[in-house]
Image 1 (cartoon, helix red, strand yellow):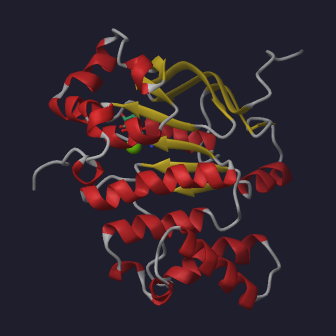
Image 2 (image 1 turned 135 degrees about the horizontal axis):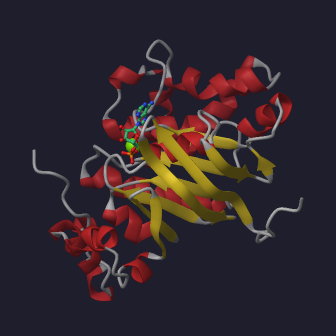
Length: 278
Ligand SMILES: Nc1ncnc2c1ncn2[C@@H]1O[C@H](COP(=O)(O)OP(=O)(O)O)[C@@H](O)[C@H]1O
Ligand SMILES: [Mg+2]
C-alpha cells in the first residue's frame, strides 16, 4: 500500500502517533512534519508529552500506534543496521546535558567518534577540539570535567558532543533551561548559526519565549494529546486556542513579544526576559 505523499523537503514525518502510559493518553493521533533546515520548536505545558515525543523520534521508545519517519526511514520497520546508520545522522542534546562525569569534556565529545568510526585517537581529539571551538568554548575547557563547568558551558559542551558526527539533524531538549540571560542569549545565536552554517535541521523543546521569538521558524503547541496549533510565533500569536493563549498572555510572554518590536531590537544586551527570580 502506498503511504501518503509528503513534501520532499520534510526530514521528519509524524503521522497519527498515539502514546499511552496505562490509562493516561499522552499523544492522541499527533501529526506534523519538520522541514529540511528549519528550526522547529515543540512547546506545551509540563507533562504535555514533549520529551516523550522526542524520545520516540530518536528511537528511545516506540509509540503505541502511528508512524514516525526520520530522514526517509520508517522507525517502526527499520532493521538494526538501518537504525544504527540513522543514529549516526542525528545528534541529541539532552535536558540534563548527559555528559559522563568520569570523562573530560574532550573525551565526552570524542565518545561517539570512538564508537562509530575507526579513526585514530589523534584525529578524534582534533575533531573533538574543533567541535568545542565551534560551540564557543576555550580549548582549555576540553581537559576539564563536567562537574567543573558552569551551566552555560555544560550546555555548550553537550552541544559539541551532539555535533561530533556532523549530524544532519539536531535534537535539543530545553537548550536554555537554567541559564542566566546572557548565557541563554549565546545559545540562541549558536543555534541559529549552526543552522545557517551547516543547513542543520533543528528540533528543540523549549519554554524559552525569547529563544522561540529569536530563532524558531515554526512552533507546534502540544496540549491535551494533540498539536493545537502550528506556525511561526507571529502566526500563533493570532490563534485562539486556550493552550496557545496561555503561552502568549502571561507577563513574560508579553515582555518577550515586546522585545520583537523593531525599535526594541537594538537593546539586545538587556533584551532577554529575566528567568524566574531566585
Ligand atoms: N516512563 C513513563 N512511565 C509513565 N508515565 C510516563 C513516563 N514517561 C512520561 N510519563 C508521563 O507522560 C506525560 C508526558 O511526559 P513528558 O513527555 O515527560 O512531558 P513533558 O516533556 O512535556 O513535560 C507525563 O504525564 C508523564 O508523567
Ligand atoms: Mg520534558
